[in-house]
Length: 239
Image (tube, rainbow, N blue to C red):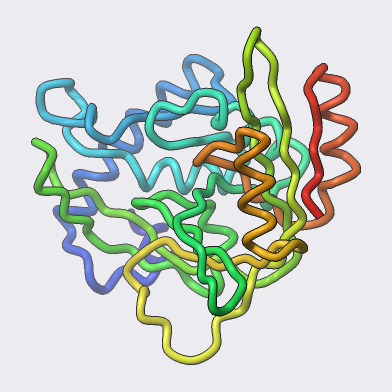
C-alpha cells in the first residue's frame, strides 16, 4: 500500500478502501503464483460477497500487466492468453477495448472499467474508488490513466468456425491529448489507424474482429505475422 502511494496519485482514496482492495489483489496474485499462471481473466460481477472474493481485483489486473502477465476482462480467456503471449516479448502491452469512434477527428476511443497496464500511462496514474452499486461487493480501488502517445498496434484474435482463428493486426498511432482532459477519472486513450476509421471498422468487422484486443507499443506487424503463421492462424494486416 505504501508503494502504491508512491507510484500513483492517491490523495482521493481512503485507507480502508485501499486496504480492502489490496487484500483481494494479493489473494489473486498468490493464486497466480501458486498455479504458475502467465495470464488470467475475471468477470467483475462474480467478485462479490457470496463467492469469497468480496471486491473486484481491478488493481491487480493493472499491476499484473505492468509485470508482463496477460489479462482480459469479462472471462475472456482467449484475449488474456494473447495479451500474455505478446507481453512476454513486448513489455509495453495492455488489454484494451475499442469503445466508440470519433468520426469528426478520425480516431477511435478505447476505454475499460478499471484495468490498464499502468506503466503505459501518460504521467502518473491516479488511484481512486470505483462505485459499483449494481454488484453486491465493496467498492474497489482502481488505477486510471490516459495511454501515452506513440506508435503501436492493435492485435485481435478472432475465433472462426471449425476451431479456426484470424489474427488481426492494425498499426495505429496513439494520440496525444491537447487541452482539457474531461475524462480524468477513467482508463482512456485515442488511436488513429492507417486506414480511415470507416474503412478500418468495416474491414475489422468483416474479419470477425472482437471487442477485446491487445494494444502493443512499438513495431509489431512483422513479428505478429510470423507468430500467426507459426500458430496456423489466418493473419490479416489492416493498413
